[in-house]
Length: 538
Image (cartoon, rainbow, N blue to C red; front, side, top):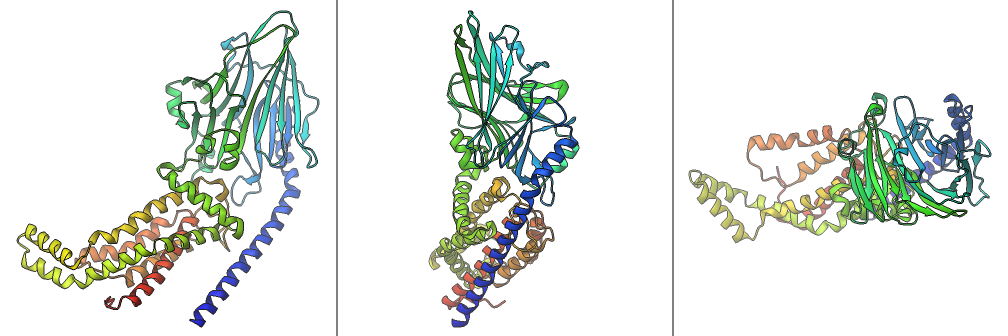
């Protein structure tokens, strides 16, 4: 016992030391990257000729860089300063884009006198700005940048972008100054526009072994909390829903853009598809507002453009956090993720948090595990009697089944008990899988040594091999009641089959399975010692 305790403390000390060393190394690396970050951004913008073009204005805080086209005041490029394009890339992640073969824009505008043919127009009003580059300083509370346009009737329009440090959302305010002695009917629209079919390079960039990742539109209304709308469906059947509350969004793995009205009013959520340009559109437009002569009116909205951070998105709009879609096991994935975040606050490593959660789950399930092994042991003890019944009634299957069931009742054995832990563990396994491939916090999250991304596969396939070894050990020491030779051969190949299957699974999920298997082996050893009648001889 003393030796066991000493080994445990030595292992814990080594494990914690490695975590601290890796965290310190990551901090140094991040600080170095932050110093060069600005140069990388502006080099990329110059290369794409954004800075040199007179019609573009750049807004930036400490987490996002936003490029606005003065023709319409639309956002045509968004660079996320805290996220890399890929694991080992120095290029930062671009959420909104303005390429020849791929467009993803956030648009907003005014519809004067409710002329709906103003939609998706090719000629936008040109908004003037006082400067071309605005960067929010750490000492400043917010960045408030107005864009000005006066139409041919002398009506003044001011579109103001408000940005705060550490935030992935903007506040956009459209203010209309009616300087004439005639009333106005004004409506606004907010929409997201994206290339429907991804070009080849974008497909390759987003390709991964994920069974549950979604790219498309979504919306929320007063009657539906969250509704997904795939691009191909919205392209064929245009949407037109009247609602007094809600939001519209475009989703992809880990990231989201969403327009949210700040003050709930009657809006129409719509979709459109520009077939000639392969563009899917989702947006909302407000009902017309009467603006009296020589008076002002403002429309206000939030625009989220960044990672799908559930806690933060929930503050912007009700049910916006549901866009982190965990599938049918959302009810299990959500509390698992909250528990994972809780442990991460103390451990500082997502892999370490997964290990702690695995240990906790296995401890909670220990009574069921013990019951499972007890049932398996009793089944093995009865195997000679079962074989006798099979030999005796091999010509009468019904009689054979009755006799075997009677034997189970006599010995008080429930053969289904052995499947209960498996039935419970499978939803946990799938919930953890959906969480790993959808929670942006785990994107490119390092663990130890060669594991640099818990949401991606093990680059050297070491973890899947270790998982296969642990499966083989469990199979070797477990009571075996299978007598059929073919079934035995299949069971012997199961660790190999699972190893191959897990090669492309997220390494965080494989880590969970390895730790779960190791604990299972330890628990089985403990149980086998406490139950003297268990015979594990092969």
